[in-house]
Image: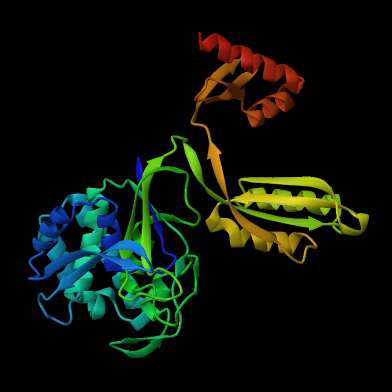
Amino acid sequence: MKICYLDAFSGISGDMTVGALIDAGADSGQLVRALEELGTGAKFEVEKTKRRGIAASKFRVLGGDAKGHRHLKHILEIIAKSGISERAKQNASAVFQRLGEAEAKVHDVSIEKVHFHEVGAVDSICDIVGACIGFDLLDIGAVYSSALNVGSGTVKTEHGVLPVPAPATSELLTGKPIYARGPSLELTTPTGAAIATTLAVEFGALPPMRVIASGYGAGDYDFPEHANVLRVLVGETSGAEESTTVTVLEANIDDSSPQVLGYAMERLLESGALDVTLTSVLMKKNRAGTLIRVIARPEDRETLAQIIFEETSTLGLRIYSAERRVKSRSVMNVETPHGRVRVKISEDGSFAPEYDDCRDLARKTGLPLKQILTDANLAYLKNSR
């Protein structure tokens, strides 16, 4: 499967996304012809430019219907009547639906009554639809994103001067990793935030992939601090069934009892931790201690961090991202003289009986666990001949 990583170190906007996808290989002629089928009357321009010496593609929407306000249903009708692919229609509609929900919450009105201002303008419609067409032309099966640089300061909107990130952008980014770095202005726009948060399946470090193309979409300004571009990396998945970014939480503890740490481990595993280990370590001043390390899904980070603070005496945590890669595997049920056992089989043919199943049978029958494991291995070998 082909995947795309949005590297938003200078934020993200709709036109930057389209430019980056074109730069990565999406056919600009096809993309422009598809956008013309929206019937907005707009013209489009794609040019090569540079930002701090980095070659990038700049996408522009010129002119078009100057209608200032549109409701969500009007925009969805424009998308539905166009001749773009079904996948691009579905993605573009989903982006606008999410944007509408954010606007509705910010203004405390029903989604049917939301008036799209900046995001309802022709350029924003074409940016969002153009990005979805670009992903489709590159045959992207999944989108991933870095943490988003939102910028700082203020931005002028139809509602006056507002702080960055603007209210709709802030609502769209709820629960997503963001930061501010660089010049004091808006780097992530509502359009860009809607594209990223709707289409990205995960936010974090670069996922494992074989890179086959990269592209840079230019922003409007050329900053002295950094290249004002959105970088996209297009590649193929590594082939592992589970190959993704995980969060690691760890702390050195020297004043919690083994019983307390054991209970903390139980709570962490019950709350979604992928793995928890306790390792004996020698800490500063030659004090014996325990290193607790938790491997977690990024979305479970805060929940598990809170459990560690609640259940142990630590005053701080180290939190960082790591790659988790697991071989493709399947499961087979085998019948032993004592009952059914699941056996995990990896892509290279190695196998192992499920420990929990064997433990339960050992307790139920009173037989040694090692005998249950042996019989499960023999049953699998007999079935696999």
